[in-house]
Length: 632
Image (cartoon, rainbow, N blue to C red; front, side):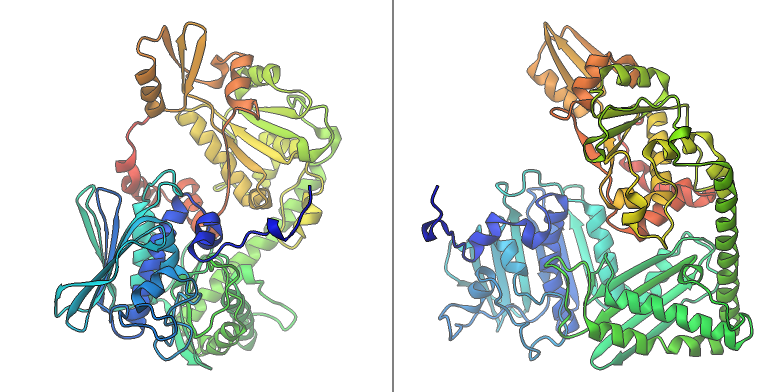
């Protein structure tokens, strides 16, 4: 087939957004839906930072419409000279059009590419903009990025601001489900990052209304993050200032824990992958703490804390605001601006002054760092000693219960970790022996969140698992590429029963992978099987349901089934059934385990699997109301 200029397709404006929405909002799932809200809210926050907005209202309606209204200046509605269009229509229908490409209107802004609200318009079935300014009320309606009405004046008002109401397009978003917990968490972040800004969130579907407002700023943010922890000192250390037109706001506090929780923002945008500001903070914190410890003769000249020692139990919030931040990607999850790095390094010099002026705080930080240093060194010694007795990766020590596959190509091989010998037997008989291996577990593995490293390394089930996959525990000073080269399987699939015990075993395994084999998760090699809970028979037909909702949907189609079987465990399934519903790559459903926010994952594992019963109880009480059915 000839390939000529006639085959070149040029997508313009909104058409490009609708063709490749993931490029602009990250995904077309729940996260993408939330991104639509954030893009509009961020514009209102920019008005606050410019000094013209005090309140933002966000409402989810019963119809799945979302309304976002602020009391800022209102989007201009006059005619734009270059295009001869009204400014409102121009901003809402043209990519890279807005007031943020110079610093006359917005000194600092979260939306710098001029695609935010226009992308929301492009991906909305219906989009209505209402502007209050100059004593009048203007409105214009759009659909899928195109105007369906002219701008018109519908009344007079002393109000000022912008109201955007939109309905996400069902052609793009197949499932319009709003994650209100995620929305509220984001609004809480914005309130902390912008003290004095009020955000009112209403969910008309359930009659819920909540207001987010804080005067303390990121000091309050850190206290909020540590509300279920025991601080080593109080209040948090706050470092603020401006350097070369970059405003830096940092708050930090150590708690009685071993894990760090550092959250970063650039122009109010959560940079979950960190970037230049995070690197500068970590390097400065390590350098300055070591400098202080040596000045006070706590460390010898040839001694040093490692960064992980000082960050043990650290909660920190880093916020930078600058004119032209550089992000990696449109979704802005990693900051790459050199100016931010330089500003954080310069302002972090105040950390030494904080330590000198607050010796009791400095003493607690040094004590915590020394304890972490001793624990790290003791753990390394324990690992070295245990490894001399137990070889994790030798082929000689492969567990007898492991049923290997015939293929020797890791990229096509799968390991199913199953619960018990009964399920293991069905899985071994039902699998494709060419590329699927089976490892049955005997009961529940050790909870590594609570156990000492020597006990973990000596545990028979953990040794069997490590030997099966071909890896020892990952150590951060080693390149992932060198460590992972001995991996036998590029898909590790956790397959447990759909009951409480099965969920507990799955959580114990995920804790192990997160703490000691984390690069397997980060490289997308850990999965969770989704075996069905019910089988519905009607003549020769067999239908499977993952949950009660799917069961009801099937029963609405099959009015009088011959039988409904509820599987109490995988061992109740025949090998052929297990293959059909959980192991056949053509039919099965498996979920890839991902880490979206390592700090939050650290916190959750510590709460759910750690020693502090009070934190776990508070967490369960917080989320128990969302559980509709509990299989005990």
